[in-house]
Image (cartoon, rainbow, N blue to C red; front, side):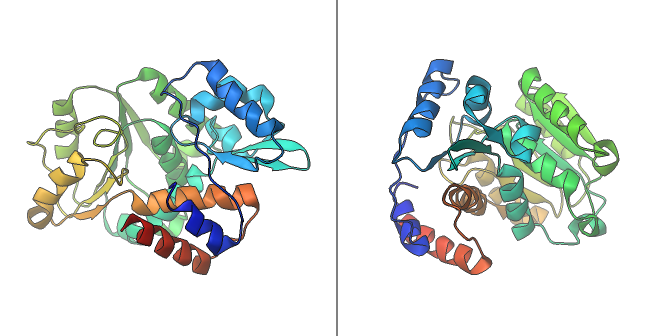
Amino acid sequence: MMQVFPRWSDVWGLNAQLIGYDAPLRAPAETYRAIVEHIKRDPLTIGGLVTAHKIDLLNACRDLFDELDPYAQLTGEVSGISKRDGKLIGHARDPVSSGLAWESFVPAQHFVEHEADVLCLGGGGAASAISVYAANADPARGKPRRFIIVDISQDRLDHIRAIGAKIPGAAEKLHIEYVLNSDPQRNDALMSALPHGSLVINATGLGKDRPGSPITDAAVFPQEGLVWEINYRGALDFMQQAKRQARERQLTIEDGWIYFLHGWSQVVSVVFDAPLSPDIFAQLDAAASSARG
């Protein structure tokens, strides 16, 4: 994104620079507070985009924000920080960007034509955003029979469960099951039990942040299934496993590139109060793809 942003700045006419803060995962609260306080106090800083620290940053800095948008209040995380009329505002745009990415590759009638499930391996921010989108999606698109979320952390599963409890009528909108598991072979078994046409998501970070995959090479993807690798860079072991079965199992495979573009463009649009039409998004996609090579 450091290479892409100058091109996006030209597309939008922002006349801005992107400066990165590096922080270790699960950084101390004082690290997050120092970053947010700098954004808040520095007159040359317009705002910020939060990548891998959305929940931890808000937990450490909630009192520094003057406002949180509805999705930030619902999910307990921030992906964007803006400044308006002297106020520091936290935004959570992932439910929007995940929905736009979903709709870009999941056929509109897929869950009408298939009595299928979603198996989401990983229960972090991406999983919560996707589940919020799925619960609130247009009923005309149908809905999964079950939305199964698997994670190695009970705390993360509890966090997503708490988010779902805040959505009016959530239980009627989407049936969510929560599975605490760290054994790839059990993930294999969960996947083998899925009906035809089911969607399997790798939202664990494995294959990008850490090596490996949440499933073994013996795992079998659902026939005519959809496979969504949330990552777009790294070894992408999970996606390579799916590709080896793509022809035999008739799989549709998507990586995280479009999700990445929607995630960044949604936040940059909010931070700079910049328009984001389909035409502008197409220009941003072309600029980013050119920088990516």
